[in-house]
Image 1 (cartoon, rainbow, N blue to C red):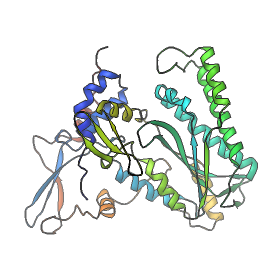
Image 2: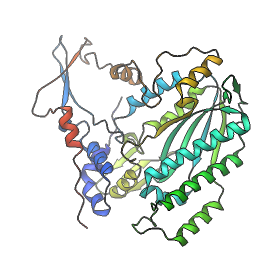
Image 3: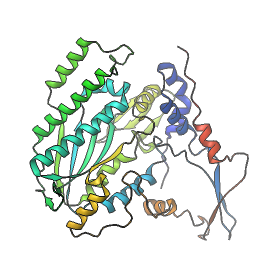
Image 4: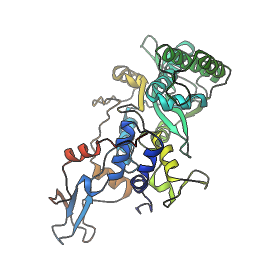
Length: 398
C-alpha cells in the first residue's frame, strides 16, 4: 500500500509551539501530541528484518501506540471487530444515534469526562427503560462515542448497535422484535433529553459547570437560560431499520471505535501556512496549521476514558450466554471481556489480511524472514520510550 504524501506528525512538530501560544493544553493532550510527533521515529527505537538467504536488512521504527495517533489504531480496530463479531447475537441489529444539542459543545470542552459519561448513561438508560416498558425485553447494546465532524468541528454523539430483540424480563425466553421498527422516536428522544438535563442539574449542584469556555462559575440566570433553551428543543435521536447482517452494522460502527478525527490519507496538502484536508463528496477544507491543531486536540479524550461501552445483554456474559442458548446458537467458551477483547491473530497475520503485505517474507527474494531487535544508538527500550513520550510539554507563559 502506498504511504500518504503527508503526515500529521510533521504538522505537530512544526506548529506545536504556535498551538501552545494560543491555548493551554491538558496533560493528556500534550502527551498525545508528543506521541504523534515521535511515532515511528528513531526516538522510539526499532527493529530489523534480516533475510537469512540474501542478507537484505530492512529497518523499521516502533509505533507510539497512542490511541489518538492516526497511524496506530488500524490493527487494534480489526482485532476488536473480529472479537465483537463472535460475541454478537445471531439476529438483526438496529443502528441508533444520540446527538447532543450544540449548547453542549462549550460544556464538553471544559468537562469532557462528565458530559460524555452523561451522554453514554442517558442514551443507555433511555433505550433499556423503554425496551423494558414497551417491549418487555432486555436488549443488547454496544455504544461508541464520536465527537467530530468531517471538518473536525466538535459534534458529540454516540452510535449504538442495538439487538432486534432480547431476553424477556423473567429471563426464561427470547423475544424478537420487528426489523423495521424498534421504538417510537419521540418518547425515546424525550426520555433521553430528560435524563441528560437531570445530569446537567446534578453537575450544577456539584459546582462543576463553568461559563462560556472560561473559569467563571455559571450563574443562576445563565443556567436557567441554558435549561430553558434545551427544554424547548427537539433533540436529535435516530434509529435506522435493522440490517439483517449485523456484521454490516458492526463494521460501520467500527469506523469510530479506534479511529481519530483525521487520518493521514485525508491530508491533501500541507505547507507552513496551510493544511488542506478532504471532507466528503470531494470537498475539502483549508485551515491555518494552528487552527487545524486546535480542532484536532478538542477530540482527545480524557485519560483512560472508555469510548466503547456495552450495556444490557452485551454487558452481561451470563445473560448473553443464556440468550444465545435460547436462540440455539453455540455459546463461546472463551467468554471474552466486552472491554478487553482477545484474538489469536498476531499483528503480522492481521496486517497480511488487511493489506496483503507479508512482513515475514523477504521483499527481495521471498524467503522467510526472522525478526530481532537490533542494538544501535537510535534504538531505545519500550520502557524508556514510554517515559520520554509521557514527559509533559511545557506550556507557554501567559
